[in-house]
Image 1 (tube, helix red, strand yellow):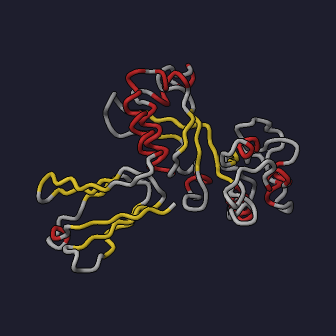
Image 2 (cartoon, rainbow, N blue to C red):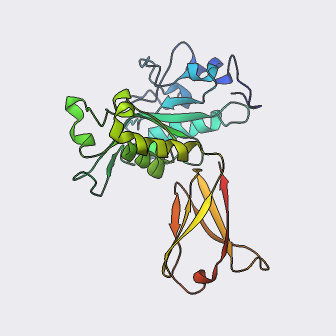
Image 3 (tube, rainbow, N blue to C red):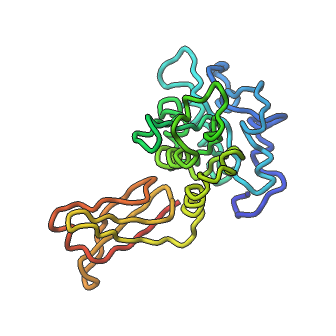
Length: 274
């Protein structure tokens, strides 16, 4: 899409050095000299269309580039962060459309079926290029393996877990609202209710806010629509001004404090920013 929101036949990225000739990714432990422009520090050997999907621009979808924590012999600032900041500055969403970051290693496991905690991959230290870019650009994922029929060498990465766990981890940890699933998981009947619920949450357009009054000391605000930032205001009376109650990221609900002042709130309003 161009900056006017129209589908483009030849996006600005397509003409930039980082995208010339083939599709590139900022790839594992491979780098060139820091003296080169930062956008040239990409792996020209990786031709995988998933790594930097220039074609997605022509289909009206956002562009993203595969991004792993590349390193060199200089510890600080890290090479991957130097490249990350250069990409974000170059493709700033103003004179050039923004570029999101991508990994294809999403997985979750549990100690037993239905038992917490969920252990997710990528961990935030390995996924730091995506994790540290929340609020600046989007993070997209492809699953490491199907949860319902894992590849032999990835069985432990998804043990006792489900595809819905993976979507939940991607959203709550990285703010990601885009996950590519394997068809085996989409077709698995026992997964479908949870997947439909995540689809509803991630695509809903009408924001709804509800108050779950379980007990006088355990009141929960719950909303159904995702956004990088959700802000809730509250007031005890419509004759009084609203005050900011909370501002949270990557959340669908919030436990209200149990202090007496919070228990006087009767009216709430919600605002979400992209």
